[in-house]
Amino acid sequence: MFSGIVETTGEVVDVKYLNGGGRQITVSVNFNFKKGESVSINGVCLTVVSSNKNKVKFDLSPETLRRTNLRNIKVGDRVNVERALKLTDRISGHFVQGHVLTTLKILDIVRFGEFSRFEFQIKDEIRKYVIEKAFVAIDGVSLTVSEVRAKSFFADIIPETWKITNLRFRRVGDEVNFEPDIIVKVVADLLPDVLKSFLRSEKK
Picture 1 (cartoon, helix red, strand yellow):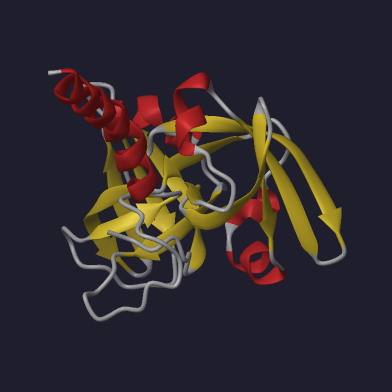
Picture 2 (spheres, rainbow, N blue to C red):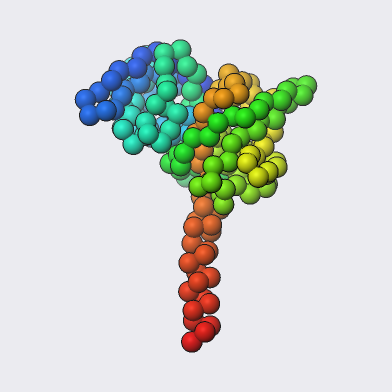
């Protein structure tokens, strides 16, 4: 479990193709990790394979590659890094599982002074999860939805988020990882069935 408060960015220094359609990436980052611990890389919960001298390796399964923008990862890319939460940590963002639902395209980026406004694509399958003033995780960054339109939604980026995360390297047309707020997702997925069950019981 994570909070969407990115701690730093790392640089991808190696990408290897594995048998079975997976890959292994090596990320240079200023943290020491233990083998087996969970780390969020661009919002994807990955397991540390090995860590040595500020270089950490992760295996990417075919499912991870299919679902996330890590399928496009290459040497030199900057990725968002967040270590797993401790039970005693403050939740400054929101609960992020690291279970990316899909990728979305960046439709527009507008800079105004030190701030930025990103416009993201809305796919039909995620429409019910995007609610104004609710949380979303974009590449693992906890953001608040500022506006929702028919085909897109917006999020404003403060200077600190711009400085700490890889959003400053993003361009229009790039794919980003999307994970909805788990509370919104559960309600949106279960409420229709609950209402149907309630209506059926009322008719009896």
